[in-house]
Every structure is written in structure tokens, then in C-alpha cells.
Image (cartoon, rainbow, N blue to C red; front, side):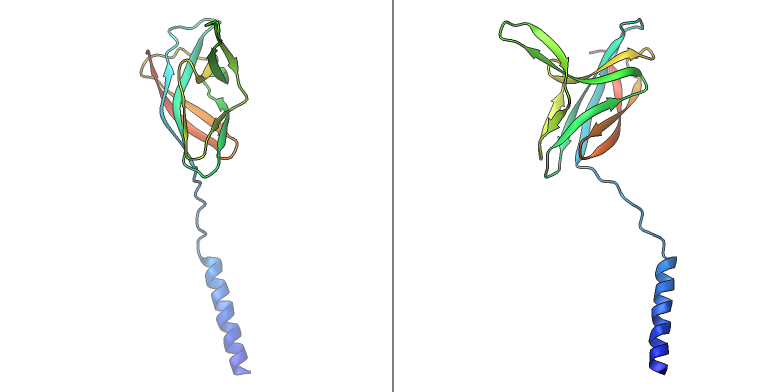
Length: 152
């Protein structure tokens, strides 16, 4: 009987110690890495003010992911676009539902290809300004980045 109470006491003590231990904080890891993010300066404010966001997106994961949307407080609307040239040499640009980033691969959002259009700017973007964006991916979720404004 003494042995039973001793074991019971040890179990209760272990339970109390584990309850008092501080929990391990959750660490959010992402397989998505964004580099070289920059915004083309708008050059003024009017009703048609637009700018464009460019960047490199690297997927270090084992599964493909998709950039679904982009948000920023510097624009009323941000859309992922693709610029293309048809067989007759006519350029066009249109919104796309997303940009797939292959597993272990990367995609460059650049002029003349995939990019993010910022429409209805809420402030003038001058060279050297820093702009914050939230990129939403299908698998990785929301990732916040900062981009420098340039004139090139």
C-alpha cells in the first residue's frame, strides 16, 4: 500500500511540474522566400495613379504554392497581372487568378511578365519610400514584406 501511495505521489508531482512549465511558443515557418522586392515610383497623384510591384519569389518547399493576392495600404486595389505579347506583336496585360511557384523553384515578377499592379494610389510614391505588402499564398498563407520605391 505504501508503494501505491508513493507512486501516486510521484505521478501527481510530475503532473504539477508539467502544468507549470511554460509552453513552447509556436514558430511560424514558411517555405516561401521573397527577395528583391521593389515598387516603380508613380511620379504623381491623379485619378489614374498606378504603380507596379516586382520581386523574386523562391519556394523552398517540397510542394508547389500559388500567390493568390496582394494587399497594401498604398493602393485601393492590388492585382496580380500578366503582360504578354501576341503573335502580331501586340502587347496586352490582364489580371490572373494566381502565380504558381513550383516546388524547389522560383518565379520573378518583372516588367513584361507577371507583376502586381497597384491602382488607386492613396499617396504619392517617391524614390526611397518603403511600402509594406501582404502576400497571400495558397499554402504558406499571409507573408508581410517591405519594398523600396525606385524610379527605374
